[in-house]
Image: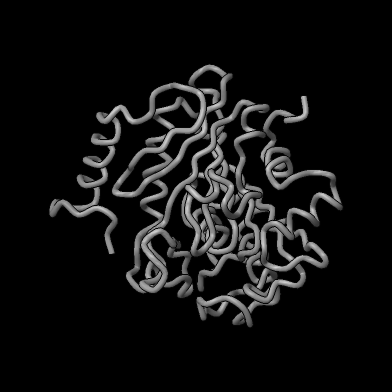
Length: 286
């Protein structure tokens, strides 16, 4: 299902969406949290109080998990570990929280998901929503709006958002590096030439029963999807010339707060701090 449809093809419709986005003046250069609309979806941007010069700025793109949304991450209602605002303020980078589309008819229009491939997940997969094109377009115009260095754009996500992040790493060149939490690459194809030379950190709870680390259908969760294993995900990326480091968190399940607790115990870092370090952003403790 096309994200935009003007009757004149995808290139024109994406251009129209971008022009409307730019003309709306939705993003003033004011520090703090801003919510706006791009291509029919809301998104949230966090702008720190201090930034490098335009053209030298870094952007971290955050994708929520299935049944989540950007607003819940930003407000601290769920997936708190994905909230990068405090670390971004200290390390002077920009964060964008994007939204998927409704994942199920049963639980309301604010329960969102991504078409991450392999039948995952829900309505976005059933309707074949082109989330790759949507996210790539949104990131390109955010980069133009905020003076982002294209070599300093990074992606991270949890669960369905992790799978979507890895799909973007596999099929596009928009991210310099990515972090996936509790979600492998779920595509059938193992050809990820766009990821050649890129770095990936995969974090997965050893006791995950929603998206098992060994693959297959989980015993918890409602998607019913069959997932690839982390090992297959690793092989796909390594065989394509990427670096794929799998960090297995003992005693942790699928829940992001449990994974964060395990990382805190092991490294003394939050997920946000660990992400900033992996991306090579300035030390947030300075």
